[in-house]
Amino acid sequence: MKIVAICGAGIGTSGILKVNAERVLERLGIEATVVAADVASVSAATADAQVVLTSPELADAVGPTNADVVVVQNYFDLDELAVLLERALG
Amino acid sequence: MSLPRLPDAAIELGASAGDWRAAVRLAGRALERSGAALAGYADEMIRMIEEHGPYIVIAPGLALVHARPGPDVLADGLAVVTLSDAVRFGHPHNDPVEVVLGLAMPDPSEHVPTIAALANVFNDAGVIGRIAAARHPDEVRAAMHLQAA
Image (cartoon, rainbow over all chains, first blue to last red; front, top):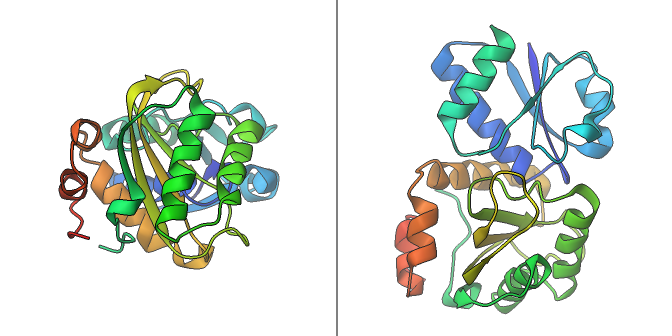
């Protein structure tokens, strides 16, 4: 299972999303690879992904994908992330 | 913990910014003062937001501003700016912003520990409020579990 965290630069904010998604997945006992990517490489990065995590502004930039696009409001709220990831993967 | 150090020069408390661009510039200037970036880095951080929107407002009241590594980045750097009057970036849920965190990273392959350390600090929901209320740089460092400069 592959999850892609998207942000503008592919560092920084998507890195935080990646780190926290990994923590939540561990807590939920779900095995998945989480990678961070920028919007420019989104179509390549999400080709084989099940879930795309991103912010409200960037959700439209993700474009056509078979993955579930999950919009995260508070990147530091692990409970919000857990609910979103359980819904997307469950 | 592997956050860059946060010297007094990289902290500005109770600043006034007329709009989000001015707020980002303050963070750019703080990174410049601490020797982490050149003046042009502020323009690059602003351009990221103009291009991709205010996605950098990643939690209520907090903007994490940064740009890609480039010639304007001199060293790993962290800057904290708190605003006397909160500023709107245009984020649907997390506006207005009281705390602007500036980040400069010369080498993207080495940024993972820094980002993980940032997540460790801010996963505590009270930290943003404690930084916003700080009246002295020591209080900011204490809120972020950073050693004295």
